[in-house]
Length: 150
Image (cartoon, rainbow, N blue to C red; front, side, top):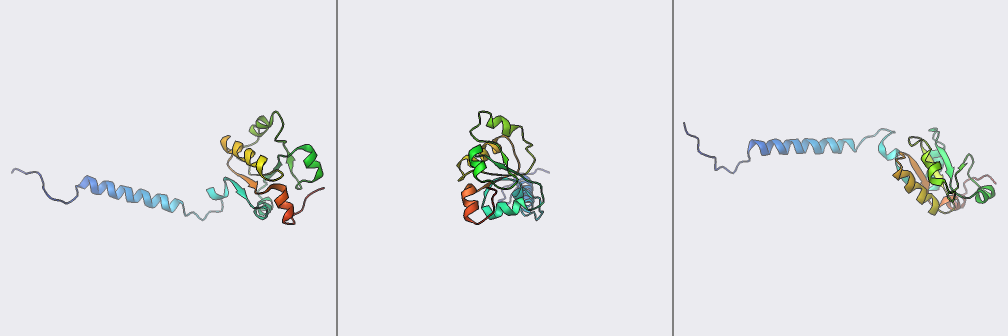
């Protein structure tokens, strides 16, 4: 029995198998992106947040560390309660940040968002997993009537 090569336009079994595998993979990836877990990747990211959202993060019971990257003089004028001061202009700023626990959740801020934005980028490069940078810094925080220590 001689079998001549098929001239049919029907797809081969290997093409069908590849299409099924591709669809299955796409379904798994889409399902993973729809997680409703409270500890999903969106909750643990390096990002900018509004002052009110930062306040909620600080009050959520996760033990976030609050870091002020302004100068000691700025810190003495006013700061957020419980903030740890790591002056952005210190010669060893990058070293000080690199010694922090990369898996600890953080909220960072500066005066207006410029220095904390640079600190946020550094932390992302260093592999920190959960950093929320207060958009607009302490100026925005105060303009929303949120409390500071003076």
